[in-house]
Image 1 (cartoon, rainbow, N blue to C red):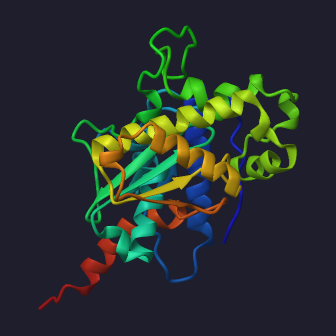
Image 2 (cartoon, rainbow, N blue to C red):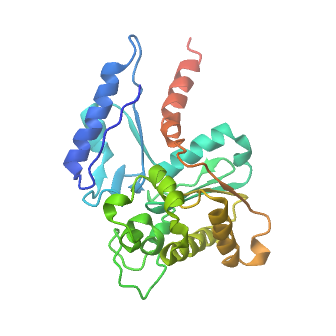
Image 3 (cartoon, helix red, strand yellow):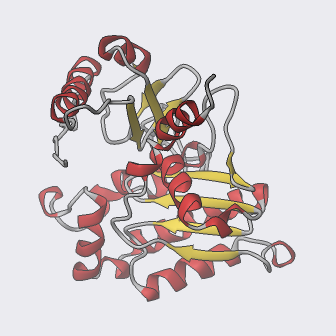
Amino acid sequence: MKFVVRVPWDVANDQLMAILQEIVQTLEKEKPVGSELLGAGLSFLGNINQINKELLFSSRWRNIRNFSFKTLEERLNMEVLVYTSLEAQLEYLMINKPDLTDGGTLLYHWGYGVGASFASNGNILRSKLGCIMEIGHTTYNPNSTVECICGKVGCLETECALWAILDKIPYSRAQIPEDEEKFSTFFIESELKTLDVIKTATQVAASGMSTLYQILFPKTILVESPFLTEESQKKVFTRHFYDNTPEYTSQNVEIKFLEPGFRGEIYGCTYELVKNRLRMELIAKS
């Protein structure tokens, strides 16, 4: 089954808790007769501490701070797995394209926010501190006075993320779709690529990807962005990437662009639930 729940931009912790409870409880009621709900797999575009199972903050929901998925587990009385959307997408991609497990694979997202996920030989890189790959919140412009959602100033996101440049685009806020899939269509139809603000954002976003590349040296980079759906934009972005990357380091990388609307995180965030249950069921019992 599929159903859509709209989460308002000003949602607070207690409201989000109620919404997620309602979603999972609806699935519990609608499950086929005789089946079992293994748990809930959730993926979010935001800053997640996986050790503490907390959504620290999200550019989508400005009032969310330290949202606890452990509390959600207790209220639902079932296991809740939580991932960044990019980790879940990369997991799904590697399952379906085993060649991505050879060497390093970087998934880079430039859209409403900026983030990344990285896998080495099929294993997604994680941190014992809980947070990782926060390229969007590294300092890009130390002289900036623009405050980021994270509380710092001068972050990479403040220079190129959709949330940060919305007011610089010469359309009313009501005209600009904030949903990334819809924005990709709007971007093409409105010729936004000719604007200086978009040209600058493209260069900054490419610089962020170059920084990650020079730290991780992946064999493959997968790029997901509503700003990069046209071939001309892809070429501009790729040129900026190489301009920001020393020639001796960038000769062996392969850059691939994902199609708009890719939703692999739906399956990637539930993979561990299914795998763990299969392991239990397939173990021989005397």
